Image (cartoon, rainbow, N blue to C red; front, side, top):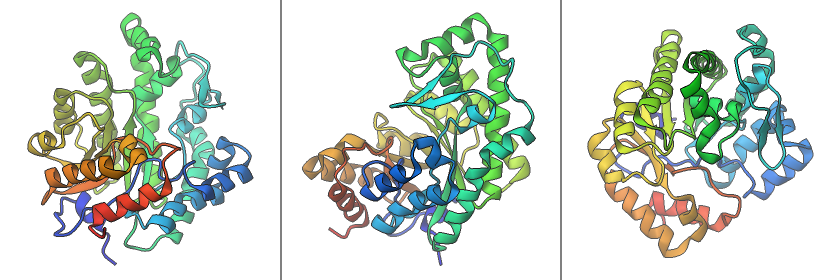
Length: 338
């Protein structure tokens, strides 16, 4: 069977509606997810159970028929694999890191900790039809460094101060994370992922010099490391919050196949300027609102991308209060079956 998502990521321009999936599509807005989450006992318990992680990965495909499933995991699995303690209590909590001393550098020590992700991918792949793509993912080095340095609040102040005050030490962290992220994505591709997405969730607000050094350069290095092993790997980049100049630099420098856009990016401009397959960028709050706000936003995105290689998605993850009937409406709007 033909996989529309992969056709588009390869640069195809389908005559009909674009492929559709949503970031965080396996999550708390679904009652079936909440049941499995309760069974797992904790968020990390769910991430670490391959059978349950595969089950929640497949739930939104069964309910909505999306064109791609993204494996249920978390970007902070890499800090855990590096030996750093991560606790989830209404969000992640990490002890601030001041140096790379004590972090695990041996990939063979990372793999057993990350292995549940790969097993979940294998199970999920068996449960998907061939016309559905399976996506892996990882957090990008800058975003992981933000969490390791002290969290994503307060404009990522701790990571930026570390980068300014101790650029050599901070670069050691970025280099280690770059290696770990690339390896994790390669192992996910080995396990059955058709494509992978690199989430740089805290890329917004950086001065241009820091954006180039800690977002674009590591992104390019990760793509190069993956392609050295997997020449045909399909990679989506998501530097959330990047400026127009930053997006142009990222798209033109990293070598990603596709670029995911947040709601602040004008899609008409992006189609004209970025020169890669685009993904995005519906405001998750428009999906919560539904009604005319949703219909108008979807129509504007589809109009701007008509005839272009494009994957419909949200501009960030779906929000827990999102009504399920609004997601059904979104699918009908994108596929023209209203």
